[in-house]
Length: 281
Image 1 (cartoon, one colour):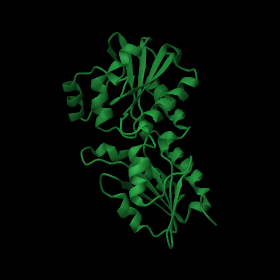
Image 2 (cartoon, helix red, strand yellow):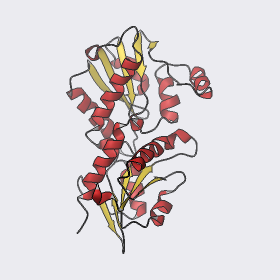
Image 3 (tube, one colour):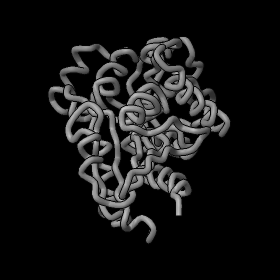
Image 4 (tube, one colour):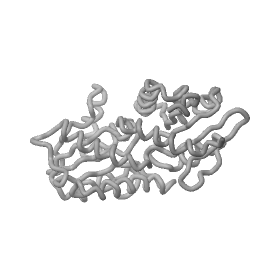
């Protein structure tokens, strides 16, 4: 779009010094958007690893820059700690935030994970995994329980709310026999999946941005796979879960995280479009 050609796009991830997969979605979507040549420049930035977001923003020379947080929720880090540390004012209602400097305007967009189109991403993940691994046949959605596995934290209720809201949206489509939200750090726990599943077929979609330690190791173990097996597969650079795997008399399909889905690239652009309306003439 012409109005973006002189602007910079900064994709902001949490990052991690312990797991390189944490940064992968940021680099993946940045590369895709760079190839489209919609923006004057596209930069990757992180809160917990290099390149640090403060340094990236300080080096920008474009008159306008959009910062899009690749976070699941508008929670503790993405909505409070990071924008506050960068100097952005509190978010008003459902809008983006604007920070005007002498020769530059920065716009801090809303997190990708709360966008309504994330429902499309969840459904694409769920249908895609059973299509790719049909055994003995691809199960009908109406005969399947879908779980959204999120992090959750007592520090910020918005973390949980984002996962539960998405579960509500998927449930409203009426495609699955049941849809539930499960959490690593709150109730109901991911390890309780078998108490809620009433169907033979189960699909678990990790509502996370990256395929880091939580999605690659913690969740498969909580679903019932032995920790030694999971770690051995990771050491061999194999998927940590085999689709489908039978546990407690159920067939479980486990997808990769939603943040790696191609649909997230389009959601990033939607967040920029929303924020663009704040630009002052």
